[in-house]
Amino acid sequence: MRKLIVVAAALAMAVSASVSAVAQPMPKVRIGTIVLSGIAPILVAVDRGYFKDEGLDAEIVDFQTAGAISSAVISGDIDFGVSSFNAALFNLAGKGGLKIIAGVGTEMPGFKQYGYFVGNKAYEAGLKTLADLKGKSVALATYGSAVHYTILSAMRKYDIPKDAVRLMQTQTIANQLAAVLGGQADMGILHVGQIAQLEADGAGRTIAWAGEVESYAFSGMYTSPRVIKEKREIVEKTIRALQKGAAEYNRVFNQRDAAGNFVRGPGYAEVMAALAPRIKVKDPDELAKMLGYADPAIQLDIDSLATQIATWRDLGMVNQGVDAKSIVDLSFIKPDASKSR
Image (cartoon, rainbow, N blue to C red; front, side, top):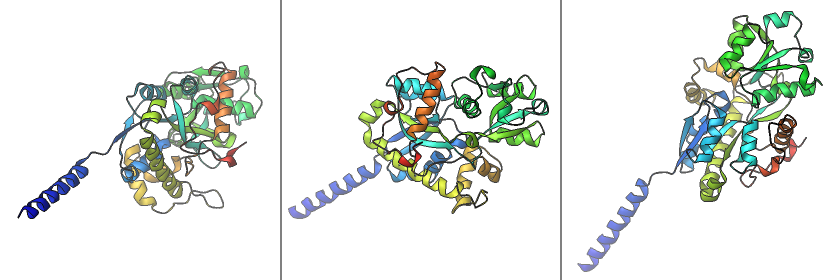
């Protein structure tokens, strides 16, 4: 009888331990970003359950500006940030507040994310190619942003001096649009979603796309040194989940035929059904045209980061001591040597 009691007690303890293990909540991971088409690989990773597969409960926290995301990472309000690369982010990383741990989006030929949009008045007056930019004006929401870099890369490619183009900081995207459409600015660097509607309305035309001018790392994931030190296993799991999401995203949305036309990858309908509502696009096929390129392994392009940092340093917007290799942590994803310039 005593033996039966002992066995029963052991079984009860085993069941209790099992129930306790099942009841254990998954660690929560908060990822701050701006919910636009550029973060689609992360949304795929969340919606397809890749974070859950790694034992993580991932929450996307929507922000309005890239600056607010990086500040939230430093303060510890969120664990990870995903945004476009910008001068302020590089400065914060240079001071030791952030570490870039993965690439997310890349501007490259054949993919339309940001375009050089010219109003009708300026186009008719002769601004028909980027080589015509000298003496013209360009509206952008904020200095030091990825959009700002996009116009600087065009000026570099066409050997246009810094003082030969008037850059207008409008503070908001709405003001940027108003400046271009109202004729106060000749050009604006706009997202493909905005451009599609403007061109449909006959408000102007796109004379080039950012990826045609320069292939460069547009966005990435970063975290704080504290999170890397104290939650390294969670960082590793987050990276693995994001890699799975990026790989599936790449298979579904980044395939092109010999002529460069978009080809639906395997599982298109299923993945798009989950993605479209999150980005709040009514027509999924229109969304497919807005999705940029994502490296399936979310590799970090160190040379591209170095070029961007050097560009901002020349303008006095990034501190001289900031170096691309010092602001990244390559222990999670090794850089792709094939991307060396």
